[in-house]
Length: 296
Image (cartoon, rainbow, N blue to C red):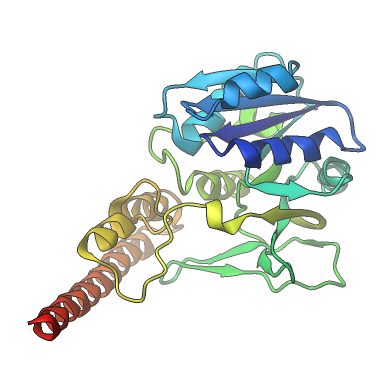
């Protein structure tokens, strides 16, 4: 059995498209757990009407991604068998009919591995966005596995994105749930992957299990070359920002392998972000001064 956990907050159209993909799967032994974190667009009512078999768990809008996923896993663990699986799935992706079947086969092939998905942009030509994540702890640098079309999977990964990842139930029972108290939104999927790898769980990205991502629906990602004061603050500290410095400092502290390297990375990371923030603030201030002069 695969228990599919989807965390949602509004975006009903995307949710319905994702659910349609699930209903078309060749592998049929699954149960959908949808955690609706305070949607105001009629998500719960629509799902109940069109998909009465889906289990809906409710939040008040403050669960965020990690809290919603942890709530779904907490619901599953008392009823699941050790040989069952949890699929962590975002509602902003679509996929082919053999998606679940591929993930399951790959997990079993690699010894009950955690299996991530190859992520491509939903917009043609479907550029590869994520083929597997690597970590260079020196200077805390995330990297990407080079996508090789001749290989069925990437094995040399250090962690995995949670937008489409199959996790054996036995792994949750062994290492615990997603860290929703310390990492409420971004970073919890990576932290879980680091924790699993440290515990000896194999991590694999299956290149035959592709999710197509609606990238414009994801997170706080400012595109301007120079950010306003508010945008720079949000980049550094917003719960919706993948660059949130608190999130990254927590991951460094918990998973960097050596104390000396941990302290170096913390100092290096803080200094780097102070430089970027100071540079952006100066450029934005100069930009404002230029605009005022031109308008006077």
